[in-house]
Image (tube, rainbow, N blue to C red; front, top):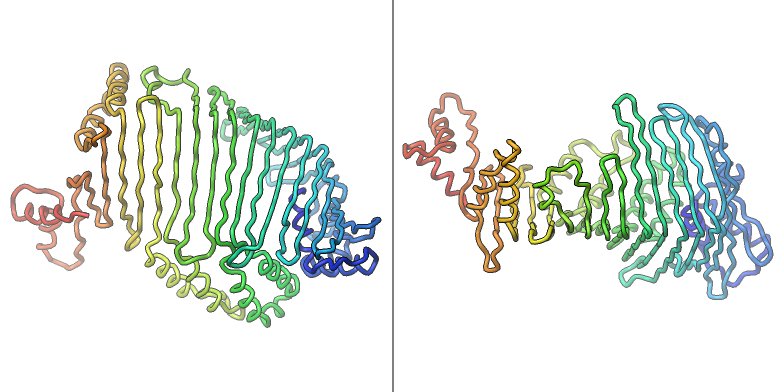
Length: 520
């Protein structure tokens, strides 16, 4: 709920405060501004209410009234007092915003497998901020809490979450290319989540506990189109009627184009210190663990990036054979994502072509052509430089994959330091494990394909082409796939297929040799 209130504030103050006097007329203006984004019914049904309280306005959001107004099945029980923001106009046209989100809430409802419930309690939660209507963003803000507990129950699973003191900050400025640049941070101490699963149907019955003394969240965005996005929301509220929406679709298209690229770039990171996971098989842990995500906005050459990093990894060893312990990773750095993603062309073509008076608004043929055009721009999956380490062993990899003709075309480079250590561990394991004994010759064969680098590392450059051929360090490991010839009685095609699979020095072998020369 504490995340809902800033959204309400952002929608409420769509016009400058102009150092106005706090009175009933100002309260009505705020109500009218909110109604533009939430609809007049929100006020008629008591979901939202604006009133004068001292030298500020009180904006109250009543979730219980919202639930009661829903036409569908109601929850069995809901206990939640209205949340409120205190807002006050400033002389520069912006607004001071304050909130107290200390409270408890609970609700119960019938889920697909029986009753479900949730209880949430936030202790000493407070926040202050400054909102700039010209940017449609909070230019500064801080919040804190003393602690939080949450419990959820359902038929086959229950979860309990506790957290200690937490703080959060937000800041925004006008972006050079339009929109808003923002940064946001959050830190929570003593975070613990226990999940208990009891599913007789699958036989799963075990608890898992996640624990960290410090959870942190960092996010930043560039060029977020806050005002055009608010305009789109206002349009949706004003055109809830289907006939009106169809009649005003030209305006909708203009608003959609104005909101592009939605944002230029958004990045976020979750970080955990001394992270632990307790499970029935033992305790997993990491001194530092983080996950990161980044995404360009709607552009002609967009990127999406993911990263998973862990250092000081510990893995339960009691269920593992002794020889494998030397191979367990202690540090992991994985980076992957996508590149050359043209969403801009797709979005603009779709906006121009859709017609709400048709069913469907976009034809299947248009959708197929749009996808084909997207793939023609060669979007690619990218494996950034990634490493897995343990003592003297380090495996590094990077590469990319495209899909020409809907078939993958990939290049991956793998280099390993300490490969002999891996072979030694497998050799030891082969003494008592038949499966490891079968894998051991393969490990020796892989080493034979490797190229020794000046620093002693072994490197493998693997090229897997769309024609099915595979080379390792330039040597053909697998020739191109057989060419399928639908011509009836074309034995020449059959000979070529045979040759592609075997090279015995015959004519078919020559054909196979020709196929083998298809180097990347």
